[in-house]
Image 1 (cartoon, rainbow, N blue to C red):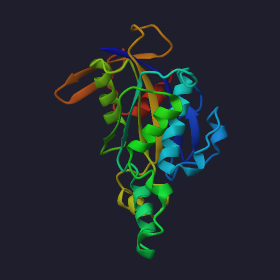
Image 2 (image 1 turned 90 degrees about the horizontal axis):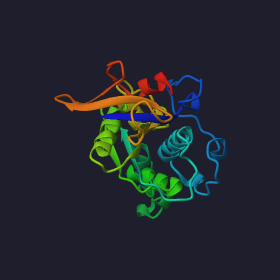
Image 3 (image 1 turned 90 degrees about the vertical axis):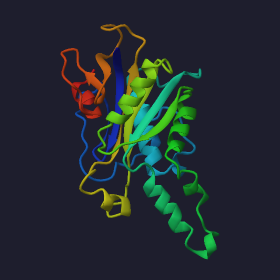
Length: 242
């Protein structure tokens, strides 16, 4: 089955960018850069200050991907889905919340942190913000290459659950030396988020994106370029551009 990548966005310690821009995708080590919401979002986000780092990072990458695909602004609710993969999900937020419960018999437990102690909450915020009504889920991933999210999103498209999907990866353990960062130091050194827009509506060779194909085999979903080269990570799509 053919599909198109029509846009992409990323956030890392090096800053942020979109797939269509000339700037090269860069994931240097360290926590993702912090920035005011106005630098990325066209609308005012009253809740931006309440979001945990994991949610900020994922939402920003999704906003940039939707803008790249000319899908960011729309007054109507759209049947676009989201799949996000991660190795650690919102573990940093979970631990930060737990630390607030250790004093005064739990009476000082942070209600703000508690609101972001499930990884799917980020996707709920995204669905509300961008007015998306398609299937929305988080999936676990071992290597942080984003392929689990891509494969899951493509299966949903192939099964008719959605025509357009946001698919990407988010890992944000923010604080250097924190428990999650120390645990993953050798196997998942990068942090940030990267999302692409996958679209099955445009026939092969048409539309505003780059065409790829995928098929399900013994090793799972395989994604290939028109020339037959196998795609091994989400980041390769960014390197190829639009």
